[in-house]
Image 1 (cartoon, rainbow, N blue to C red):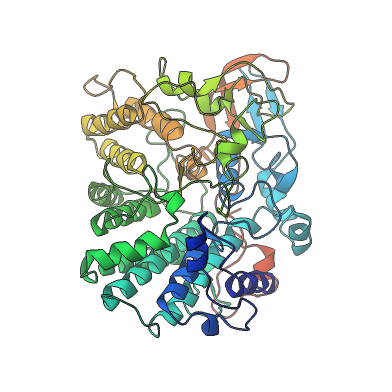
Image 2 (cartoon, rainbow, N blue to C red):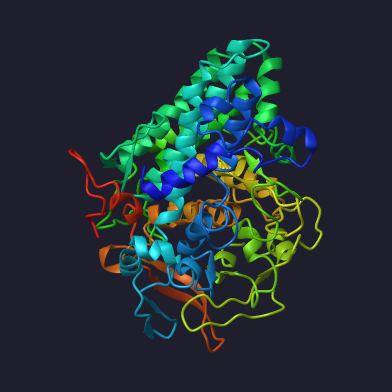
Length: 564
């Protein structure tokens, strides 16, 4: 890994524990693995408690706390924030890390056919700022997700390199396999994040052994799938004692995250989470164009292929074995002290909550337009008390009401109250069910797909009429699917991938673009049929902080996306 990252990794791992945790002295004591000034982790981590502590820090510190100065205070504020910005779910005025300009389209066409060119190019911005100097100044968006996910991956390698020499109590095999499954799951998560956003990446699977062979995103995603399947295999065949499994996993997941849908997953629940993650890896990394209401739209130039019938059947199979509505999943909560993100600054939801004229992220008109009339999620969570106007494209009449308006059984989109917001780190029931819905619709099983959409709306308390059995065409059913994914999965780090695979982020001249949008002009006029030409880079270049210090070696693929 590159020098700056190695410095951060060394700082995190050597002094890792004591940085994170759980708010009570017993937990802090449990995480004390010895003198943090000793030169190697190996000398600190020589028992089960120390290894478990290291495994916690590998994820919640290396992976999810910010590794540099940036907007917000966790992985879920800025890297997730970019994915919501690029999907036009939110906008931003602040200049930090280019959040105010990275999501601006090249042009938009208003209802009166006026074409407004912004003179801003996402591709040009990303490349002009992909330098080590700009990273140092805080203006290289490509840096952040790469930083955290390879830090997580490297720390998991450290744990895996130590584990076979650690004495475990109880059923030692079960306890050791639980920690291994933990590391395999999070390595799969990290590789998925890299392969879903960057054109190329590195496969680094041994502690202290780097690589300068850059491989295509497809190979990175294959590594993700491999580790997810390794985790599933251990959970299926390597857990003999539920008592020991629960004891270890109960320590690996911070107690303040064992609330609501978060908690100590059974092995079966975890395997279902893995199946949903495998389905996600496939779904979000291939095109399924739905441009201007056309299920058969074609994108002329892209860095990935198109979903086939076999792919849709695979998604259907995996999601059929995926997360159920009663399952626990991987979530995060803010804590009063020693957490890994704060209630006010640690998530896109928090940065979007409050009066739109003051919030860091402004709730987008393009988000709100996807709620159906009478949806209780809209009335319970959004208000029109103030209007934010801007000169580019993210003016909005909407703000998120902190904590919602109090409607019982209705999903709450944002709150800054400590411990109240449930942040989805991994996949969810809603995501799994909507993947089933989309696969069914694409395969011609329209009513099955609509039934799944209705199930998600009921689960979230939407209170809108069912669409099952209403005679919708494939295009009509996909419209319902798109609307529901946009509102059900917002702030969960998926929105850009949806916009990309549906073809909206590509140039209109190549068959892309987003049509039929609600748009508030700087003069305050509301348009409802606006064409937006984003023309975004679909898969990002490797950050210069990696490629400059760790130049591509023999057999490497390009580190700059050659398709744009």
